[in-house]
Length: 120
Image 1: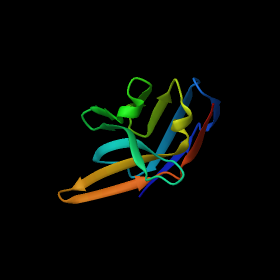
Image 2 (image 1 turned 45 degrees about the vertical axis):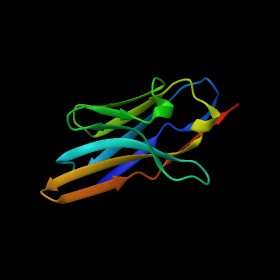
Image 3 (image 1 turned 180 degrees about the vertical axis):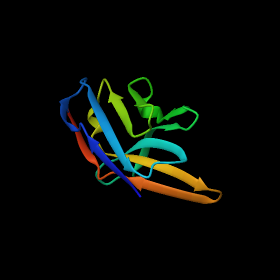
Image 4 (image 1 turned 60 degrees about the vertical axis):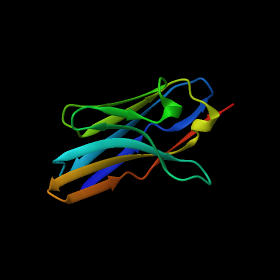
C-alpha cells in the first residue's frame, strides 16, 4: 500500500502563489505516473497536472503557464507550484499515484486532499 499526504493549501489572494506538496510512503514501486487533481464544489474531479515515469508532463489547459509539477529523485515527494492564482482555481486538490507492478495490474492511490481558496 501507498500513503499520500498533501500539504501547502490555504487562502491566497488572486494573483498570488502557493506550493502544494505530496509526501508518499509505503511500497512505492513501478510508478506509472503521479499527478494532481482538483475538485470544486458541484464539479467533477479534474486532472490539473501529471508527470509520468519518463518525466513527461501534462497540464490542463486552464493552468498551462501558471502551474508546474515536479518531483524528487526518489519519487516519494512531488509538488505543484501555482502562480497567478485565480478565483476559479479554488478547489480541493488531491495528489495521485499510479503504480503498475505487473502486467495488467494497476494500483491507484489518493491523498486526503488539501483546500486551496483564491479570493478575488
